[in-house]
Image (cartoon, rainbow, N blue to C red; front, top):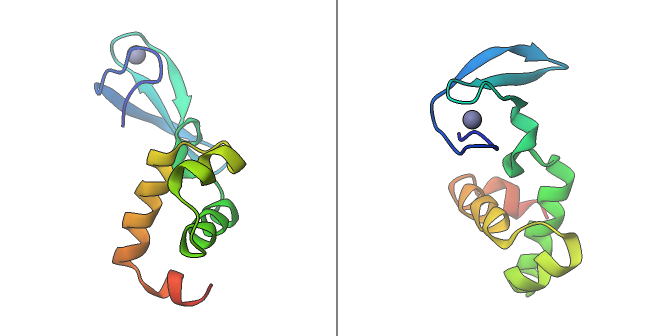
Length: 90
Ligand SMILES: [Zn+2]
């Protein structure tokens, strides 16, 4: 976890809002929801990206189509590899 403004990792939990964890930066006092970060795209989007990848699209192609950064997709791929059942269902 990093602050989206100053990239400090000095952040702390600041309650929950709409079922999402809220954080606050100790350095610049910026408040943000975890949804600010790419790992909280919806599961549907995630599954779609993984599906495209396994159909043979490259990470860059997926990035062009979905506007999701290729490192985010790569992160999901790594996750999926540790929970293989997600892949098997697609
Ligand atoms: Zn900050």
